[in-house]
Image 1 (cartoon, rainbow, N blue to C red):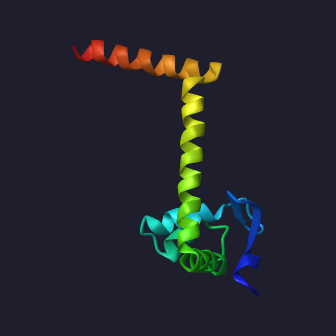
Image 2 (image 1 turned 60 degrees about the horizontal axis):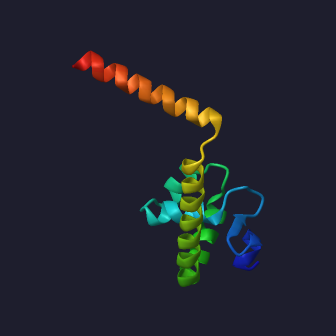
Image 3 (image 1 turned 135 degrees about the vertical axis):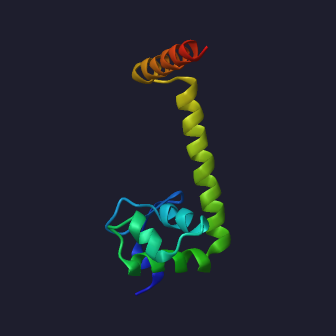
Length: 111
C-alpha cells in the first residue's frame, strides 16, 4: 500500500482521509499546533492511529507542497469568512443585534 492510498484527492485543494469527511488539513493543523498522534486521535476519534500516522508521514514527505496547501486553505477560509461578514444572513444579523443589545444592557448596569 502506498501513502496516497489512504487519501481521496477530490481536487488540488481538497484532500480527504479515505472513508471520512475529515481533510488531511485537520490532522496537519493539530500536528503543527504541537499535538501528538495520540492527542490527535482524541480530537478525531473516528481516525485510526494508522491513518493519522499515514497523514503525518505524507505531510512530512511532501512538506513544501503541504505547507502551500495549508496556506491556500487558510486564504480560502479567510475569503469565505470575509464574504460572510460583509453580507451576513438575516439570522446572523439578528444574532449580532441581540448580542449588541445584551452588551449595551450589561454596560448600562455596570455604569
